[in-house]
Length: 335
Image 1 (tube, helix red, strand yellow):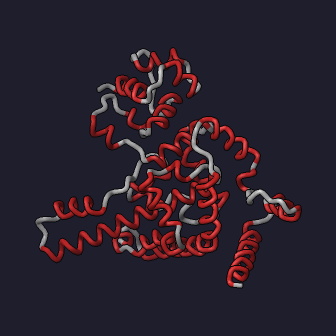
Image 2: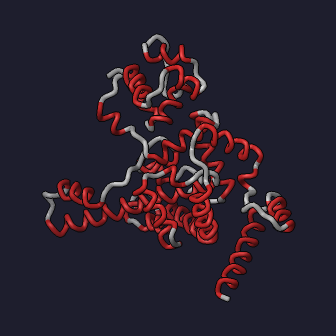
Image 3: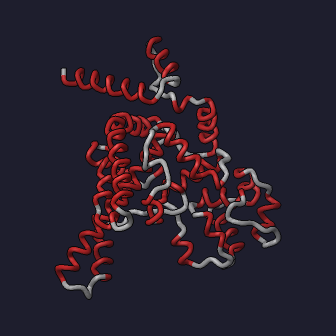
């Protein structure tokens, strides 16, 4: 079908009239009609295209193509996580070219990381990992199904060699998946507003809960650096720098893990659903800066004062406070 026919199909699949979707996305109904009838040009960065793709759960770059086939439709379908993030960014009026900058800025305001907050080798060598950049999706692949696919792919290899290749490939897949989920969890933690259940299917959310259940699961994604194939891309000096950055990130995330875990658990109970109205609420909190100075709503006057003053503290000082408070918490629990 043509891209115009696919555009109309998306709207009808969503069960919106042109008038209703125009009101929802703040785009004129007449413009939508012209887009669908090939009377007005558009591209993948056009506001309406960003909006309808965010609602329908498709990568907007599908509209780079003049003709759209079933393979493209399947390939450009987004995960629920990416879909919800795109909706948030659309209703925040974030421009397409600012998507990555906004997310990186959001994360680095919350967590000062070396490798997780910038473009690095992982994004360059494997496009399937850039889910957090919203240009791709990375669905969960059933282990049994994936194993059968690999068996078929390497069926002509000698048995022992085939077993080694399949084992290594599955481990790489698992590490990539953990790394992707780690990024997603950190993103939800940084947003600190929406219910994590909104971003995953029921089956996926069970997997997220497993990752957040303890520090070992949470940090397992860093095992990806130990994979031999990663070393093949870099000389020893470059790899040493990357390894150092990852180790520093690991130390920071170990310190933050209890807070991230608690935040995810609290958001599961009290986080908002992702819709146009709640995103407006989020925008107000984001602009006021309260999301980055956030504690549980304090009742004690001194607790309240601490929360208000923390926004002025440098990161190193906050790290010391967190470390000290965690020690107090541990002492109390042991007592």
